[in-house]
Image (cartoon, rainbow, N blue to C red; front, side, top):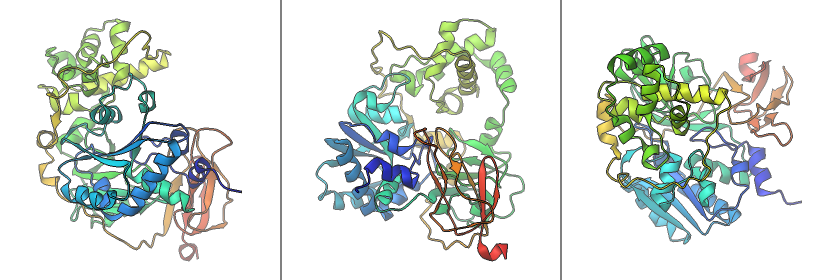
Length: 445
């Protein structure tokens, strides 16, 4: 019996590799007029998409065509920054065989890879506030996700992910890393074994979180490890507590509205007004309607790391209020509203080069080529929840042998989630409520 496309993807454990890990079988279960591949490499310093498109061109294009056919899309766009001329040249050589796939060149601005921004750039359609691209007839996929879909059609499960390791490292590079490998082991590939006074940022300088525990495992959604000195500007900014943020805001916010002027989501017409949220927080106001503007915030960080002249953090205040509203059961209400982009959207894009300079990352803005490496890992710790939805339920017992690629945890029934597979062959030496540990057979002996 022929296996359904969505079942192949679900079986392989494919999730959105560049974002929040939404299960891909669910995303591709709908029909859509357009497919957009997000190859914008939105965050500074990350090089994964560029390397994948160069080295896995055939798999990528085959996977994209399969997806387009499955969702019955009339057109598929590869949205990539025009500056990546080598990648575009490589793609164009192959696209003669794919008449329904087209490259869409993007300007070099931040946040070009925001899902809703990229839909507007390519289709000139505004996704409703709090909505998804499907609301305007579009599905957006990440480059690595497309390649993983192609692999799933060939019976290959997701056991690794591609990660750029950069910053204060001897040799910035991009690697294909086994899921469950520790950050410490990953950094050792770049010659970084002494991590004293070093702090990492996970996935992106703008939106990423600080890493202080380097024993954390690589997951399906890990895209970058940026290693910096603990005294770097970015680390100081990201280390502020919400109490510090609010105190600084009360002292120094001058209501200049620059945070709102440059807010990418407000420029889409989503009525996101960070300066109003700052005002409410600063003066202890209880303007519920004013607070609701925070619900549309994408937390891109443009307001705190680029636009604010006093170095304040509207993003963190937005994030705090957004969580409070959610806890209170307040949801986005778009009833009776139509969304259209501001006339200023073309003139208020944040140049990436200027952003990199502003956050003091210029010396790290270097190539990070894809490096092949033969891994001899002694141990992996594989989380059971690397995706949106419910954690996977383990289906292996302790002290049993598993092969690489073998399913070790399965999503329960029709729940939202993703299957998990062994990234190395070895013995299951520990099972906890949130992870499965596998050690190589030689190590166990």
